[in-house]
Length: 197
Image (cartoon, rainbow, N blue to C red; front, side, top):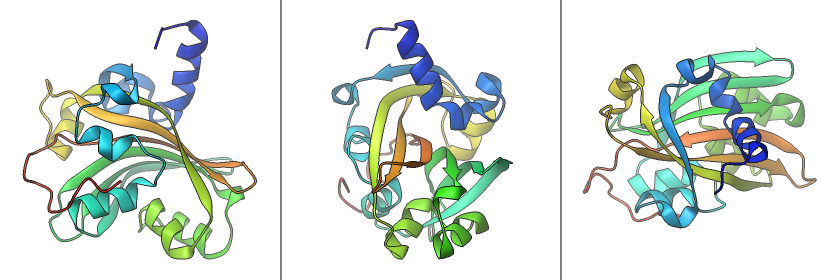
């Protein structure tokens, strides 16, 4: 992907949920490089390059129910912006670090109540509540991790991690969530499941 000014602005927009928490210094990552899907190594490509929600994808891959841990949360008008971890319910293992901006005005009823409660991963809520929507990856990237976050997800500073910028839309095409999703280091043999896409 050539680095034109328009693309740079677009990528900054894609990363907005993560940059919300203090720009580059507060994002927890550095050395970010955008990639094409085919440049992602396995298993990152199988886990990221698809149009599915990450919660069920990672749940199936790791063969374990997932729980949400909210690291930071702020309201910005009708939006709820959070930095989160997804962990295996039984193992406690971190399977994703993410930042998400959710437009609460686009959600109603139990879906909105459960999102605001901050106890369950968004993908699990949408699946369980049967909210029809589309997942549309906007770009893929690799990044290095800051020391504090690295300690939490088990990544050393020189480990290059892989992620995606994604958006979720309702049936009418309106965007209700923008997400930055980053996988922790792959450990061969750590998964009990398959590729899970």
